[in-house]
Image 1 (cartoon, rainbow, N blue to C red):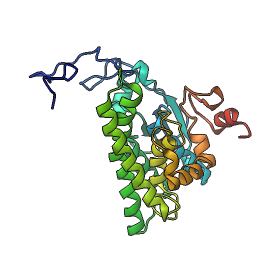
Image 2 (cartoon, helix red, strand yellow; image 1 turned 120 degrees about the vertical axis):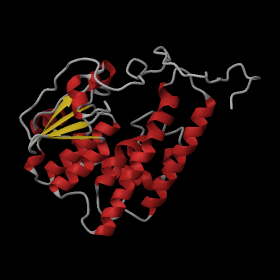
Image 3 (spheres, rainbow, N blue to C red; image 1 turned 30 degrees about the vertical axis):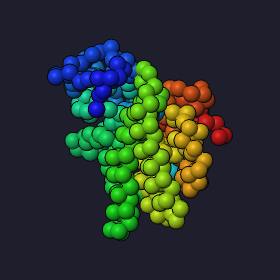
Image 4 (tube, rainbow, N blue to C red; image 1 turned 90 degrees about the horizontal axis):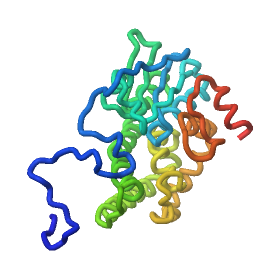
Length: 289
């Protein structure tokens, strides 16, 4: 509880009011209301699947999944990936809100369905594509359930990593000990959960690579490999040896290397591909890598 003896503590008002200048890296795009702020139709490319995204951990899930499906020979998984720049508010355009009323990336439009099917929330996209193409999700009931256990574990756990730890460790206007301690404790607990699971399993849900790995790796694999938040040393990531082994193995998959650069606009220029409309677009960036 806030303390009257601590002048730095916060006493909540009787009624909370939105302060646009609350601070933090993403102040300009955070707001307590939904809906479109402006008219902006979405472009439509030539392929059956239209992805509107950004190369964040959630966005990378979708592009890795699509690249894995293409690697498995599914021509119907060809896709156009259009950039949604969330720092400029593209997610609040009328076209994007029409596909995802929650205004979060990624969002998918399957134009091969009649009528075209919208799919939003990254976990839903993974499940939709796995069922559509019959890949990366076991059909046997016990194995399928175990995979979905971990898919939904990620959906419930990652907000503590991104909106909790990541925000207060990297993006808040000031670094406060209490939230950093609180969320660091939780993230280390989550890493321990994964480490124990991976001790006796090659992949998250067992011996087979599944959508559970595709969901979890862009967050927790990238975390221990120091690709997000620059916190690997702070979290003693090297001590989670089974997570590290798994993270490195997934990182070397060709489809992961391809998918992780799509809709990326930061980092090394040779790892950026703002939009993808053909396999050759990725080939041109990666070359022989």
